[in-house]
Length: 111
Image (tube, rainbow, N blue to C red; front, side):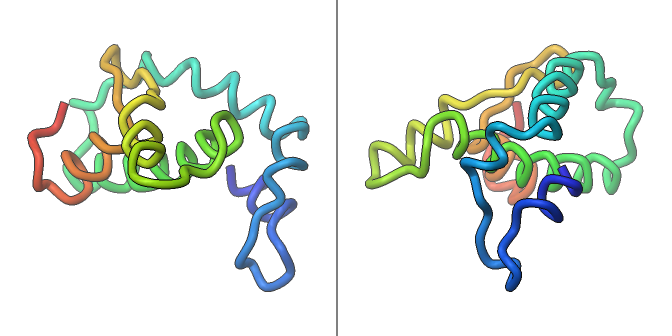
């Protein structure tokens, strides 16, 4: 994902060209790698490693979700964006909301 951010961000690094990302070879490879996340053993990671893993994954997942379903507009779209876009990690489905609130903020029970 770092290569994607480097290649497709604006000069001031404030914006991403989601259209260009969606058709890039880097993104195609990223989507293939995402399918292997089900193999990860989260229990083999320390607490700090898990937080770093999920923080990086959350940010990459948001970019993937924007490309797949677009920017959420309004409350209903945001709820769907956060709850319906999933990655299977270690055999468990994780949504953006579950990662953000259950793991990163720890204010909701983690999946």
